[in-house]
Length: 205
Image 1 (tube, one colour):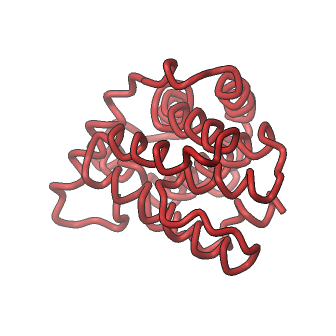
Image 2 (tube, rainbow, N blue to C red):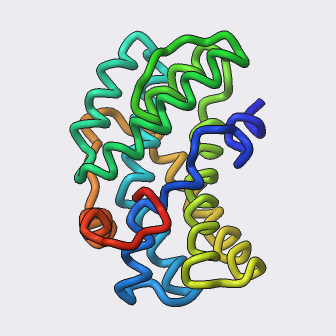
């Protein structure tokens, strides 16, 4: 089931979001595979990847707090586009998962919606967090393949190099509690803010 929930074919609209990467590439901060690897590793270790993983784990372990976790995810979004990204994907995930699997968490921020659904479907939490982070990274690699541009093979090599980072971020999230929330990825946050001002954009964020 995890392969289905986090497949690119699962219709949550992730392909429309670059998480500020479009702006970073346009501004010359990410120009090659090595740049992309470093950028995504920082986002996974210190930015939204880490934060979402902790929030997902919290919602999965205590699904009755999913609305509270969602509100926290909204509060932690550093820009309008980041807020749109998490809320739109979360609403789509909740809607599709309700229709296909019978869960009904309601419209929540993306990590809260995934956490609540994973609890309802009795999915293994560690694997769910890792799959979520892998899908997040894979989507951004796909965006970079088109934007830099990178070859498909280079893109897959970048993703493979991030597997240990993803596994470590997932493991850390399982050990964290809400007091551990917080990160520091200012380059990614500023890129997301800058993206809002661009007149020509391929991605929504």
